[in-house]
Amino acid sequence: MNTVEATPPAPAPMAPATPTEVEAGHSLWAGAWHRLRQNRLAVFGGITVIVLALLCAIGPVFAQSYEDQNLDLGAVGPRAAHWLGTDTLGRDLFARLLYGGRISLMVGLVATFVALVIGVSYGAIAGYAGGKIDAAMMRIVDILYALPFTIFVILLMVFFGRNIFLLFFAIGAVEWLTMARIVRGQVLSIKRMEYIEAARALGFGRRRIIFRHVIPNVLGPIIVYTTLTIPSVMLLEAFLSFLGLGVQPPMSSWGALIKDGADKMEEFWWLLVFPGGIFSLTLFSLNFLGDGLRDALDVRSSKD
Amino acid sequence: MLRYVLRRLLEAIPVMLVIITGTFFMQRFVPGGPFTAEKAVTPEVQRNLEAYYHLNDPLWKQYVDYLWDLTPKRFHPLALTDGLDLKEAFGIDFRPSFKYPNRTVNEIIADKLPVSLELGMISLGVALVIGLPLGILAAVRRNSWIDYICSSVAMTGICVPTFVLGPVLVLGFAIHLGWFNASGWYGPIDRVLPSLTLGSVYAAYIARLTRGGFLEVLNQDFIRTARAKGASESRVIFRHALRGGLLPVVSFLGPAVAGILTGSFVIETIFQIPGLGREFVNSAFNRDYTLILGTVILYAGFIIVLNLVVDVVQVWMNPKLKFE
Image (cartoon, rainbow over all chains, first blue to last red; front, side, top):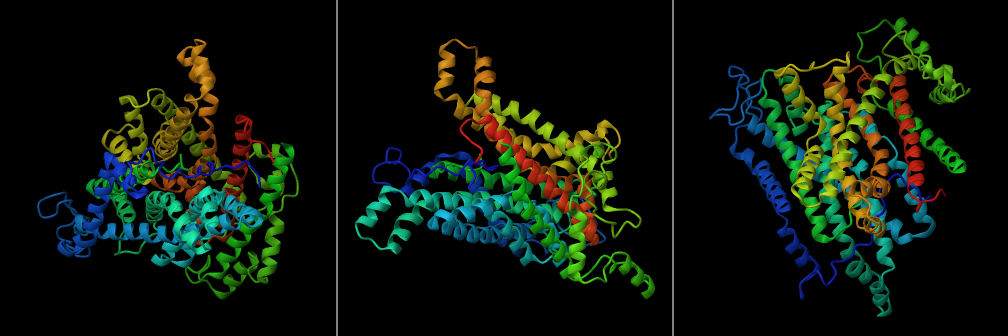
């Protein structure tokens, strides 16, 4: 092991909401929920995310089809019939944004889930095993950290075609490293806590210790980091879509819509401004929510 | 320290080997090749092409030959000043390109890399010049409206992606106001919008990290001692707190440099800049085997070396860390 690492320091052992902070009789989660509600930006972020997700999930049922072309109409600016205008093929931009949001949010969720599964199991194994196995496994993570992964995702997408399942997996496979680090650090420190020793002294089985004592204490950082991984995953997807490597037309994601808008912005500004705006708003909200959760659950960040 | 650097460089060799091997075989085992998109060529031409690029040799032989061409065989770094030729300087030969006949990958790199380096360096400079003052200001005036404004600006920088910011800046400042050219890379004025766009995200991260770093340092005893001794506020900040406050920024520079490298793919596409990033994306679409490998190896080498530099600087700045 070398002590010199290019990456942020491992998170400090999570102080599981010290009793002084939480009102008497409240569990860790109730205290965290209380603190989260005090944070206006986080509440704003959470509500925005929920509204956007609902709109994208059920909106397309009511909106016009995202594929319906109206070549006679062409690209027109925002108006009563088309709130956010239409693109050059006369397709309603609002409907396309809702459909694109489905893909973007789905990529965000699924790829984050892939990263979560890989990262948590890898980190937990390393943390539990400890010693040489841990050192070797974390050395691999260190090395992978230093690699230009975006380049490999680009190559994968070019070589194997723009397959949405490959997209999920490729992005997930890139984003698991930090999660592995965090979980490993947590497990390592929790393993040595007195209450684990106490549980062992009381004769509890290994399974009970893992599920009742270790997992609940790792959950906080996992939740926080998952919330913060979703925006970075969505960003990577949009980055790929912008380079023309995302989902295939006529399917669309926010990244692909932004690309389309950037190509045509000289004449049709709304094609760039609305997709760019809604995408940025989503990233804002998710980041605020993640920051709020981090404060509420009292997790020392490894990001900043 | 020398031992540490040497060990890290030795460790980099297997990493580079894995990268080269992975990329080499991945591009060979997938359908499609550099010549499939071309107009149909006569069998004779096809044969000549394949012979020219040694595509008829067994795959393992192509691989071993390629590795040999990549192995550094001499050390004349000074030759780099004269046209950036890696073959002259180190004996590294990336071979001819598949898509640009008569051009070697070495020539393409020598041609395009300086552009990307310039873009990256200006962007990093922009990020530091904007990010550091914002972060220090926010930390010193903690929880005041100045802090809130600085922090919101930083959050905006993080949440508005470069591929949104870039086109929006072009729309506003180039197309509507006419202050800049919408694309191109000719005069110094063409550097402004691309480097602002690419630097903004990193400026935002640097501002947040600086704020966090300074807040932590400003709470420590030696700062209180300095204040008690009557040191002025600016002396406290720039003499006493600066070094510790900047530590998180230094450790972020490694990932930031990697991000600026890959970020340039999009920036060079938006602003039509003739750099290596755009060349890499095109080479991937074109299946230009040698150009893909050349750029991937170059980027990986860059990132590994820069991470090492960052690590060394970190130890030098933080007495708590040691080379091990």
